[in-house]
Length: 96
Image (cartoon, rainbow, N blue to C red; front, side, top):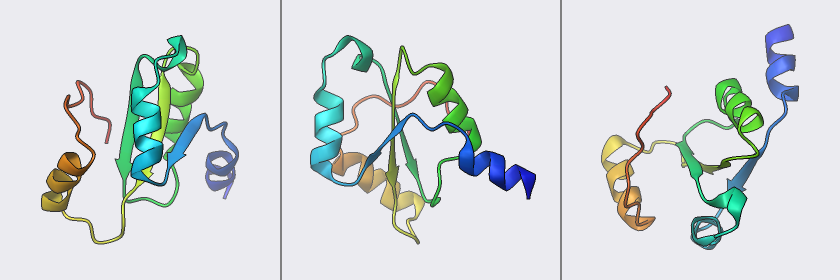
């Protein structure tokens, strides 16, 4: 119960991306803070504690965003989603 409360109330410095237009706005942003971006594609309803902690620790240097995927998204759908969002560079570090 304490773990759930801490996870629910942990500082979250992520932006929620709910449309392709939101995604384009974040990707094309050229402000100094937005030069490096970390975008998480997830099937989970809530952002994990690790991602929240990273967004809090590096909020001055990185922009963190989350795209919630629909339930039932398969690995093949992820490849198609990569094309839909025109992802050009794959991540150098993956946390799972």
